[in-house]
Image 1 (cartoon, rainbow, N blue to C red):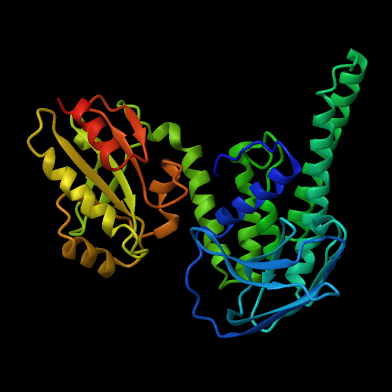
Image 2: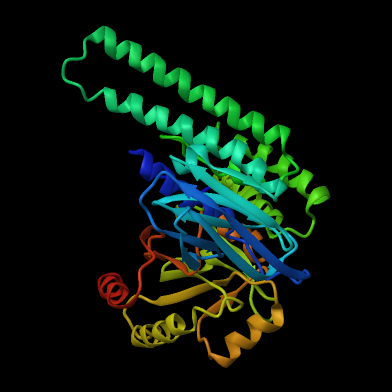
Length: 394
């Protein structure tokens, strides 16, 4: 799983959960399903905000795709074309708050609220969105309650007895929310709303309940989705998350004497190359994707740096892992870009064990390993990379 920030305020809670929604769709791929039109309408009252926005989540970002002004009575309407039959995640944004929706082609949604948006909104016309609301509103209310209790600790006049009482209240509420979260996931394991619930975090939670043992919940939902939504891209996201969890569980046995997780992956000719075979050199372990098509410029810059340090006193090598599924596309990219370093891939895409071993959440990513086998930098590019190489290859 990714490292999640502790929620400090209610607004930050909401925003953080939306950031996590990006993780929720990190394995999203283009779906060949039949598409159709979606209509979203409703009415928001109780706020002076005039504009409402529709946000689409994608593999790498959240993007506002449409906006409109509310009518004098608070009504609005959106129309989307070309929406997949398999439900995907969108957000309605009003008055700074987001309403998550799981929308499929052909849906006719009515979404509205009176007063507080997240706590009071209603939705109809989408079974998955209606189910998601039952989880989301309860979870947000609980998180806000925790935030309120935490805020009371700042009062100077608190007695020791008051502090003990607040601690008990916070602890009781914290575990109540976690129990309800788990109950929702198990009872609705065949729904996409359960996938969303899997990724929500309370203050201080790095993982859902007990760290790597959480993999059982991910497997439970994944197995159910194979029956209910076999074509869903979120099923692939879960399988990738399970692979990362499995990798963390076995990480201890994978650690080399050089103190980093070793890799052994095939190059474009099918020859397996171990990362640890480069011990004694400075190594840039680089993750990229030919399928995404967004790493070409970075590869061009890296080629210049690679050439600059070709004759350095301490050798420099790049071990580049392609997170792809198409061998022809990967090989073509390597050859067309004339990449001079070690290029490898297991062709499992987002399910690659390499991602799990290094806890890579987004592509591109890299790790700089010195000649002693110590990881000394992460996600380092351009002039910063050159400065570090000047130091390490002397």
